[in-house]
Amino acid sequence: MKEVPLKIEHAGKWEVIKAAVGEDRISFPAPVEKEILFKSVFDLEDKKNILIISAKGTPEIVIRIASVEKVLIILKRLILTNCNAYRLMAYFMSPAIRGGVLAKDAQWEKGSIVVVKTGIWFVSAAKQICIPITDVAAIELTKRDVQGKQTDVVRIDHVESGEVVSSLVLCPLSTLQVLVNFLKDTTKGMDMKGNELDGVAQQVAMLVYSGMDSHAIENMLNIPHKQLDEIYDRIIKLGIAEVITIRREVQLTTKGVRYISDATKTQTN
Amino acid sequence: MGTILIVDDTLFMRTLLKNILFSGGHTIAGEAANGEEAVAKYKELKPDLVTMDVVMPKVNGIEALKSIKQLDPAARVIMCTAVGQEQMVKLAIKTGAKGYIVKPFQAPKVLEEVKNVLAS
Image (tube, rainbow over all chains, first blue to last red; front, top):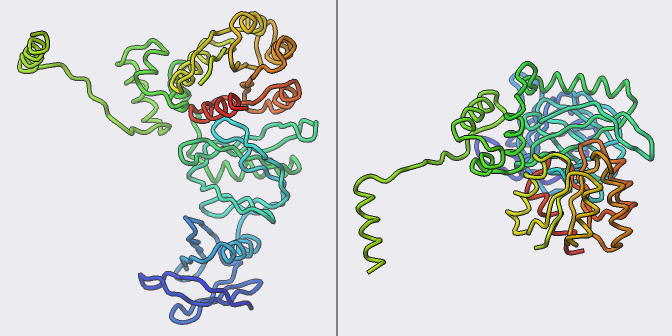
């Protein structure tokens, strides 16, 4: 067992302790007095350098820890290698495409894909990347050119800071199919089956994605404000868009008309 | 900021790119709906940059890119591809494309790529 310094949230405040880390467990001394077997961990979240570990127990154990990056990397690797999760060895490329632009220096890395309760982790010797399940936008079994050969891969799109980031997973086809089914099951409720949009609504969705505002969309598609509003209502109802700003159109009252008339007179005199 | 020729067979994508590029302060030199038209417009307009769709009728984007590079080896061309056309991207880069964007795209990323290519 090795001792590592970290901060742990206990009874509403952060305590500085030295945790004992072994190959299969982590022990927190007083005042926390807890031991977690990695195989009992079913969820791991990384939120701005705070690691949230959820493990089976009665009641369920949830631990929040913070430490220097080096310690967190070791802990994440140990937990993700041993935890209770869907895991497979694969090559991955993450990110492969960001906001529609192929990521520079993107390359295949050998590692594993670990699916825990709230996230999909890409783990290699150099990287530990987590995609929160709630941010997953699409999962697709598709083909990519790998070393000059069209090869089956799984593409996972997720939304990060408002832009779509695509990651690719490469392993034998039978395993990819299992992965796709598992991920689709994990993220069910996100698909649009039976709720397909018509042509104009699809174009509106694409323009919204591209960053166009309502005025630009109306002009580009040559549609009236009312029609755009109806399409917005539909895509909001389907859960594929959300309201961020409500703009108002106004007309001047009699008082307003008098004001601008006076102002014009003042300017022209 | 630069003058840009937009090449895409769909009016929708051309209009979208036009709006994005205009919002970034660029001037739209012209538009073309296929590769053949793109080469003719390039000769005529001599834009600073071309955004070129890959899959188009008559002459596709790769062929048009080759012709433009023959006319002007220093031409700056950004290829617009759909997801899954990385093979095309590689071919385009070998042929001399300076950058690439994948549809559907987001305005800030397009402008960033255009800025990078114009600076190259």
